[in-house]
Image 1 (cartoon, helix red, strand yellow):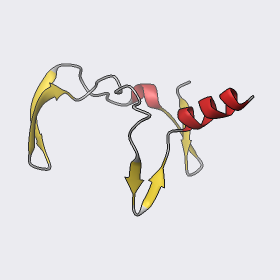
Image 2 (cartoon, rainbow, N blue to C red):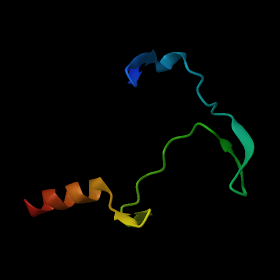
Image 3 (tube, one colour):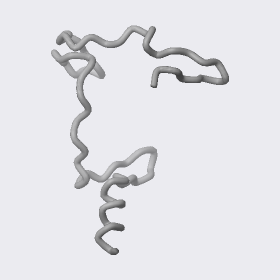
Length: 71
């Protein structure tokens, strides 16, 4: 699916420039990285408790698995 819409305006994401998978030397928030800007997402660690602006979040996959286990 390449047709997207933003505020009522349709656009084709296939025409956008995509990050390269070639490693790039860069710094983010004081941390040095030598990695590709385009990479696969890390696997979800359901044991990690997520905090954002004072709220605690849980992974939806863990909640779904718990519901399946209950029956």
